[in-house]
Image (cartoon, rainbow, N blue to C red; front, side):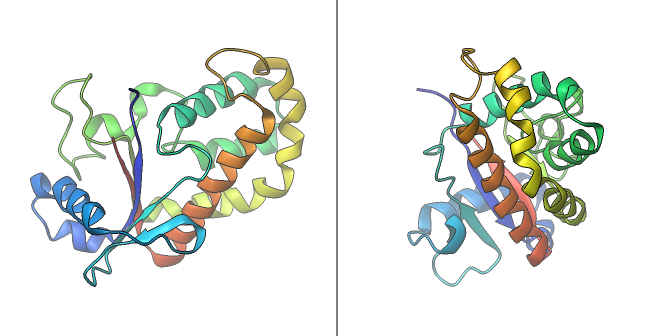
Length: 198
């Protein structure tokens, strides 16, 4: 069984009021209570909690693997993509599913101390950490990228099509990017952050 990803849109102010060691547990508890899935795949927490919502990726059935494969695909494709599109996609994907230098991944440090650091490199406590202040820039980058996704088709065909460990099709790749665009735009609209738990 592979690693899963549960992505939350969360109010950092609420999380900041909790001790660092309790933040992941609080998200987990709200997820366990939640049952309804509402528009754009965002699942609100149950019992009136208004500080977080889980996002259900339609294209991945909760698995983390497709996100990692998409990040690897982007890394392979980047050199073949027009600079203006490459820069915008770099800004959008960095810290979500791709990092130019994997050592810069905010999840490795618990998001700069906002979440507990992982016990060891094999048992990460968080997979994605994107604070609210980063999301408006990501939403703007997504707005520049969304209408240009078809420009990636040739680079995808050259570097990813038919390769194990990459998205199965160009459509799978772009659908996942669109879902990240949806959740990033929604988080930016709310002024919240994103956190992905395994």
